[in-house]
Image 1: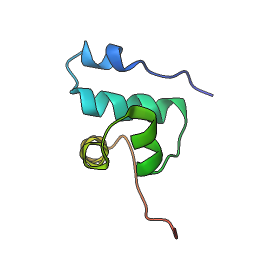
Image 2 (image 1 turned 30 degrees about the vertical axis):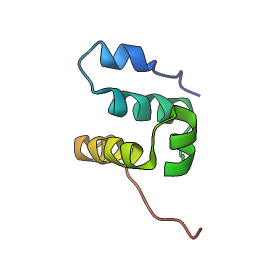
Image 3 (image 1 turned 180 degrees about the horizontal axis):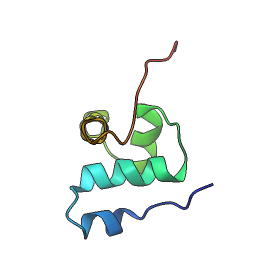
Image 4 (image 1 turned 45 degrees about the vertical axis):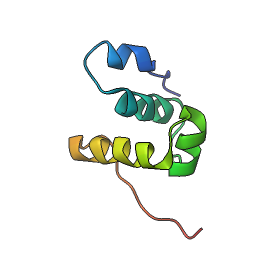
Length: 68
């Protein structure tokens, strides 16, 4: 299992806090649902969605809709 990337390491390198929090959560345990990321990061669903959109645009994550 890979080590978690600290949010601070990402923000210190110029990444926005929302994106950094999402990447950090996913580096600790993936895959995660939007709701799970929201709970782990204390970000709203809207903020997590924005962070995931940025991750997808960089090609860092893929996403899919589950059954429930």
